[in-house]
Length: 202
Image (tube, rainbow, N blue to C red; front, top):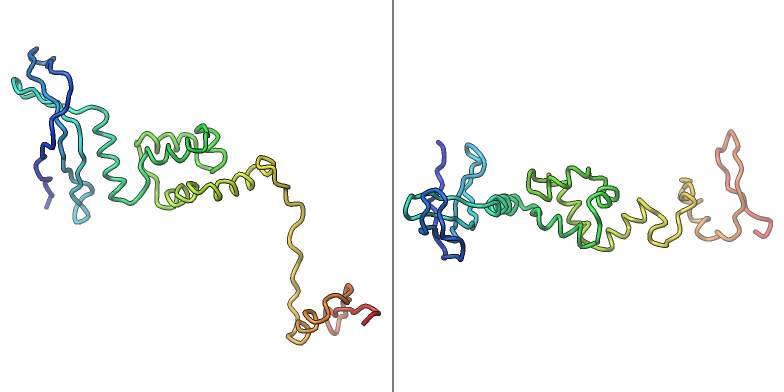
């Protein structure tokens, strides 16, 4: 069974043009309307609502909304899904002073994809949304910049990888912890495997 949205509710009157271009009278009024709509299909369909500006002519009955209505509907869907709105994504990028191309370079997101998210043409998936939320933390962004552009933060570039770890019997591990200062490179014996050496000072 197809769900039908509840009727809209007028919240308040708004200032705006009064001239109706359709019937050429001054009977046009602007109102803030809470407009319910159905999101999804079948059993997953839910009723959401958005507060939109609606222009209505009391003479001819013509009614229309502007581009800001589409933004409001999209934001309502984002809130329902628990993801960042287009304005919040744009604010995250602009808060660091990045262009869309710079933000795409750092994050690995496509420039065109970022544009569609910021314009509300599509919604980001949950993994991308979580990544974007992490990037709102300046510490995370700083670490990302070091990863992508090691010289951009003034920090030194890592020059060596971690040392290999040898797994030895428990008794040997205790010797290592106890006499670490006296160790010298070990040797490999076919019958015994790796055998740690000890300096003459031992």
